[in-house]
Image (cartoon, rainbow, N blue to C red; front, side, top):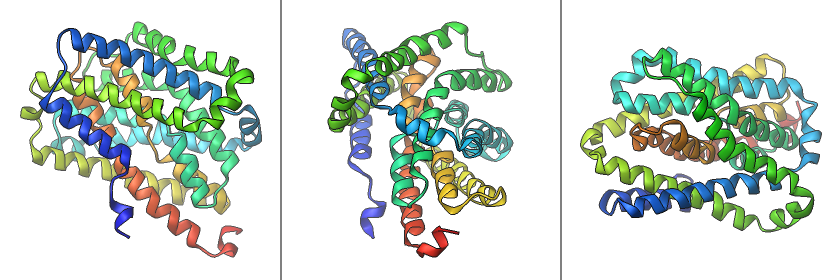
Length: 325
């Protein structure tokens, strides 16, 4: 029971990275070196994701178009609407910069690995989950920068430039497409060496977090975010996740989906990707206090993992007859 609520190794690594950046921030030439290493790691990450994505799995799940539309609507429509509709409730709990980070969180695509893992654990529609989560991640390369620009403009901030969108395409989409092209030669090797992909995945995030928080700490991050504000951010993230889980669960039932499809919609439609969000934030929010932008994503990541782990076990514990209704 206790293990369900303890942070995983990656979350512990994130905490250590934030502490390291707080007490030993990189600066000067060291910061420039870390920025270059981060760009290389991000490009490698999306190349490997492109090489790993199975076309057969996409074809197997792509025919379930109603489910995919619901997942995409939850990811790119429901979350932004919640972020704006709850503004009178959410914004007083946190600082303006953190609220920008929450709006960016609302525009992010779904996760891939954890969405599929929790769907499998809960005995949902795995092929559809693979397709829905992968489509969300790929479309997010285009949709997230545009959504972020629209939300920032409505929030009174400068919108995203086409240069920022172009940077996203060059740094994320081009390596992904290159990986898809190379899949026929290296796809099997990448699949067999999943540990390497996990290392690159988590390593690139840790590099971005370290450089982002180093810069933010040098600018006085922790003087601007006291403990009560961190508590408020936890409440904000928890409210967003709880509403997303409830709406996807009961909305999928109202639309007549089977239980297996409901599970897929719940786990793919309620998540936000830390792996995509941190690299995108580095490009889209150049000149902004990046530490406060990624902090809501990091906290949401841990809350969604803990909550969905418990929810997946409850789904899996239901009788077989209930799952086949």
